[in-house]
Length: 258
Image (cartoon, rainbow, N blue to C red):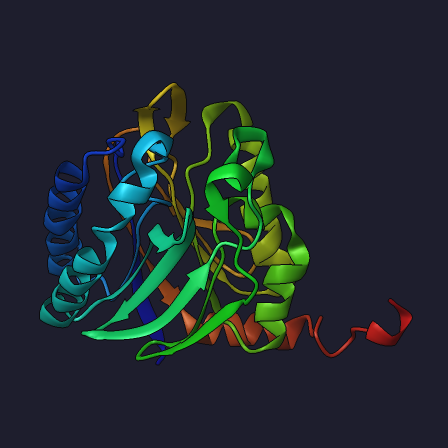
């Protein structure tokens, strides 16, 4: 596929209000599909937010929402990436369900849990990376705090990822870290990065939005402000191949030295 229209949907995730979040996403998916989007990334924990007090109960609704997403992905001809709580005993996983034109193409459970905000007390950590074979090619997925662990994205790149999708809820005080890490992961692995963030107040935290699409050189192709909405950009796969040929970083690696 020579090019892909990628989109990130950004909104104020309502903690614990599954119906409101689902309704917003359903309408937004239809809007981006009308604009020609093929790949869509949603924020981290988009269906429930980090509603710790009743997260286990809310997670029981996830299976039904996944079925709705699969149906929407088939109806709108979309690949959809976004994380939700997945039941797991007395905890939950923070799990991406990758819907591809009606098919569940992959599941990724967040590996790195952000202990500063107590994620490790409410969530179980995953132990397997995901590189999904989709109708748009190989797509890798990481979630939020995973960005701070470059070896995970490098593994996905070495396995053949050309696009990395990054659902996040990254708060405003550390927004520059997020933007820098996204560009670094794109540049050092010579791939596209599509990341969706929440915006506005979510519980006690303030989120800046700024959902972004970045190319293999680290250039920002499109970026949203702090408001709810969508951002769309074209991923030119030939330009990615040309850049990798011009600066063949992967060929020049010396893994035996490190």
